[in-house]
Image (cartoon, rainbow, N blue to C red; front, side, top):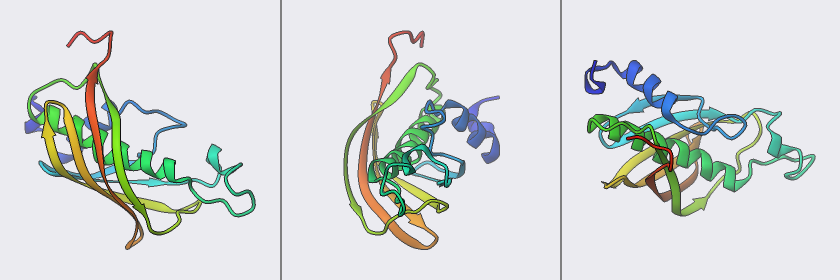
Length: 159
């Protein structure tokens, strides 16, 4: 069955299977929405995450680079995988490399927080992705920015 013909749940499952990042560096628990110009997903920062041990011991805060990575995994990587599949292309054999970000950190994210990440496509051309990506804790905007990434074939790709 063609990707375009799949149900939303089946599309979400397919995209999740293709996101290359894995534990302990995968910051996608679930995808909620996939559309032609947007994506939304969530991740819960567990209390035992490896990076909390040394990041402000006694008062752990999620590092900004980790928040940025979570935003990129949902707002750039997952959306790019979805868009490639919608175009009838096979994203296997591609990695989405992070290129640039301009972000504003507005609120700390703590252990136990569930974040909702919303990405809005600004540009999609020749495997280049630019998106406005916002990270929320509850209804509160915690991080907002513009992120860029680019799909690059891996050296062992057969696509």
